[in-house]
Length: 250
Image 1 (tube, rainbow, N blue to C red):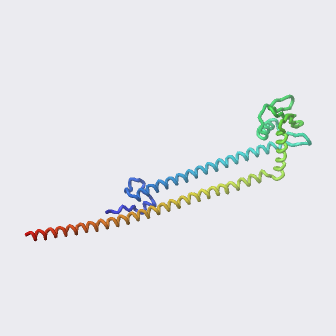
Image 2 (cartoon, rainbow, N blue to C red; image 1 turned 180 degrees about the vertical axis):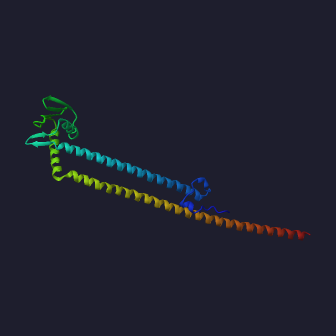
Image 3 (tube, rainbow, N blue to C red; image 1 turned 90 degrees about the horizontal axis):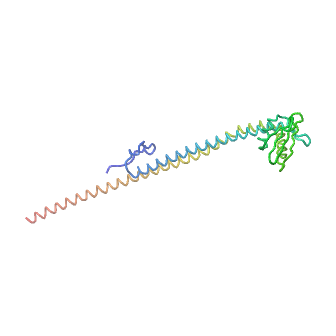
């Protein structure tokens, strides 16, 4: 019986077409192994692609948030407090941006007279008395949220100015992102390495199964040859006995 052992190199570099494989148990196992290996590769590529997209989105969101915070801090530089009065030293256009971006309020702006500008919505009324007086009055504040927000922004502005936090944040952000990316890459590489080890282990199992089948086929072929030899010997004995019986009859 001809051996159906697969070439050893197929286990390390499978043929490009599955039809090139003989139909054997080890061939079936190898086909399954090839499909599993292909699936693992696709999963690794998909994970790498997904992780890259997440990292890009995180970096983009972080940069956007940082830019927004910097804009708010720049606008907050124009806000001060003198005794009990808030003062705004910027323009009315900058004040509108400040109310929209820093206080997160939406409403209507009007010009009651002169340089005065007034912001109004259902729960808040803010009046700026113009660039001459710079006075910023909170006329209506149902939940005291505007006064609290203005006070908090002044405190944050003073902290930023005293500790030069802008430069510190830029340096920290720039140096920490590569470390975070490296940690993510190391984790992904470890997972892929683990999958490769499992694939190699499966390949070794297939080789062992193929060797066992070949050994079994050799044993079967040996038994068949012995059986054929015994049948041939028995046939010769029968023929000899038949000849002797014919001679006795004569």
